[in-house]
Structures are given as structure tokens and as C-alpha cells.
Length: 211
Image (cartoon, rainbow, N blue to C red; front, side, top):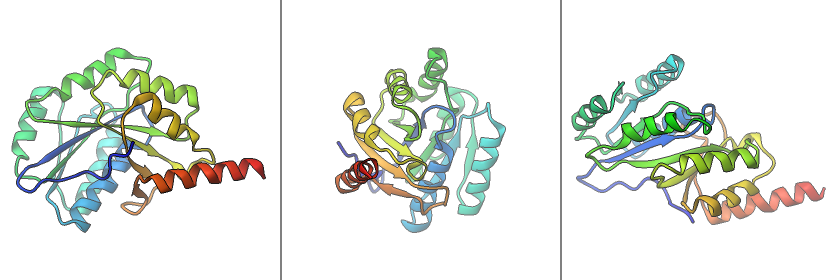
């Protein structure tokens, strides 16, 4: 159940929104992907944030957009997002950062859903941290499952010694895995998920437990 990297079609733009709980690394993940596609793949990339709750997150994304040299827009309503997406129609890739939401608050997740119900096709990627306990990951996948999730990203692999949760959650969510992140460095610490890599992580975990 692997999604592969974000696939761009010549002449058509791709819009990807990133959702998930607070603190899982959505903003940094977006910065890594933006740098990868803008600087390495030479694509026209734009950033949008609807995280109006955390000023620090907006400022962080603004710093990254300035360094990478790509536009950033902050929106506070679904209608404003619609206008911005139309303005960025010439971009190859638009990455949307959403506010971190508690998996316990359905109204907050419904708010995100309201933003992302646009006349433009928006892919949704659920970002989860491997450092979370299994039952917390299950709660996240269950609540955010009310959104039309297209793919999964697991972050903070460098902060964990156990990786079986990746496989467990993929079976529960039944959505493909796209990326893994392995540190704070932008854009280096992100990789496309592969079967070989996942097997290696799980086998190394088993060896560590055995030792």
C-alpha cells in the first residue's frame, strides 16, 4: 500500500492539503516537499496556510517560502481559499498547511473539511508521528478518517526505535503511504516510502528488541 511521490501532470496543477494533530511536523514536511519540487525538480510551487491559530506556524512557513523563493498566502475562510487557489492556477504544485487539530474534537475536523471542499480537486494527506503510542495513532486515524484521505505520511522516524505501527495503521486506514521523514533538515530529511525501506525498519526493530 504505497502511494509513491506526489505525481505532477504537465499542464495541470496539483493541490495537496496536509492534515493531522498538532506537533506531528506538518509544516516542516511541507517545507521539505516545497524545497524538493521547487529547487530540485524546478517546478512552480506555492504555499497556502489556513493555520490562523498558531502565528508561529505561519511565520515558520513564511521563512521557508522566502528561502525557497516561492509565494505564500494565508487564508481564514473557505471562500478566501477558493480565491487563492484560483490565483495560483498557473502553479504546478500547491501545498496547503492546515491547523493541527485534536482527534478528540470532531467540530475542528469538520472545520478543516469545510475548508477543503473546493471546486478544485484537493488531495488530502494525513500526517502522523511514529513517536505516538499505538492507541493514539488509532484514535487519530479514526477521527481524521472522516476526511477523504488520499495518502499517509509518517514523521519523526529518527525519534523512534519501533516502527510496527506504520504497518498496523496502513491496514486500519486502508490508504497508501507516500513519505517518511527522518529529521529536521530541509529538504534532506524526507524520503519516498518503499516496501524495502519499511521491511528494513521493522526487521531492525525486531533485532533491537532481541538484543
